Image 1 (cartoon, rainbow, N blue to C red):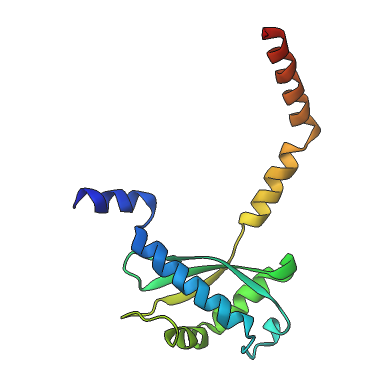
Image 2 (tube, rainbow, N blue to C red):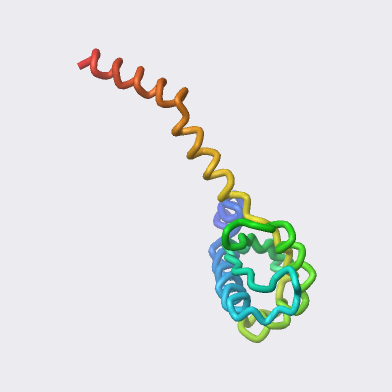
Length: 141
């Protein structure tokens, strides 16, 4: 194994995987914005594609999505998984690849985690700790 490929593996993928994932993300966002899907769970739902992670062999792609407003997240992900063959066909017209990866849609949990961290940082307990730290810093001056 070359040194550069070992470095790419440690980061979770090389530039090629990131570039391919971003191309797929951009194309899927365009497809989903046209609302051509005939699934009742997707009617009138605006969907954000936050990230696409491809497997190293480019045969599988995990698509992280979030419906606008965060309502019915799992239902939307399930509906997109049901429509994945159609979406893959639409995608093949826009992204040129030898093999187009199979798509698996998952709700992006990073928004919920960010809200949780924000609430923790603004909690009275953390604010109290920060005040103590500021008092100690002033005493040291």
